[in-house]
Length: 358
Image (cartoon, rainbow, N blue to C red; front, top):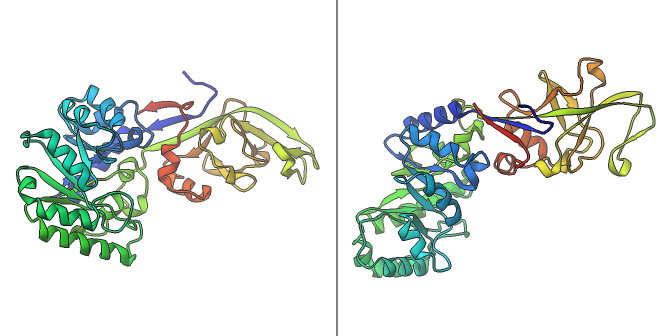
């Protein structure tokens, strides 16, 4: 059933393809899928995890315990890591639901190991800060960990991870600086497994793969500049709900930011900034119909955007759909036009959209 709202098509076959491509590309490193923020806004809750489990992905990263519990409710046997760590006396919730906190400092390590007592047969994940200054063990924490290696060695499955600040820029020297420090940590704790690369880091080279990689946006078809074999997986379109004839000199939209220089025909479509459209698109952005650009005129409203459809004459009618992004004009392209990043384009998708999985 079609509704007078934006429609999102999520291509599960493309997501499956991207996972299998990355799995082969990163061999022998293991792949753990990053599905935080409801699989970057594509959730379904959680259709993406189900798709990845079917192709034998069994390790997943989320941001917080709430996300983890939603996934655990449906998927009992997968390994779930929580990136934001162990907070607010959450030990019992983590342990009873077989969810692994990514320990971001020595205090969290102490809290978790004290709670576990002798239950050391579960995975342990530590996050070391190699220069992002966001989350992770600081150098002082590392020194404390060195002095407590006996407790660390009680665990049979230990992974130490970090996160690259500039992985999207292959030529950024800071990637090498972070890797150098990460390798120093590796020498200090040789018995552990290691993970440094998310989507961007994967394509910096095999030397960044270590034992595990953690793709996110590349699974969902974003950042296709990383590799040409990544397939676009998301398409968004919005319907025309009214067509107007605007005379020369008349204004369009809030604050009268656009005046018609000639007699024009406009289409009002059912999508706006409440649906994740950037107000920066006002009077300079564009969408597409049959691969042809349609300029935005007037200010982007909460629920509506107005387009100049004059050049299409009578080809467009109420009920026709305008393409926001798709396989031909990707989320990367649309992010660039919007002055933002592809991560934000899909994670900010409106709950008002009619989502379809194909």
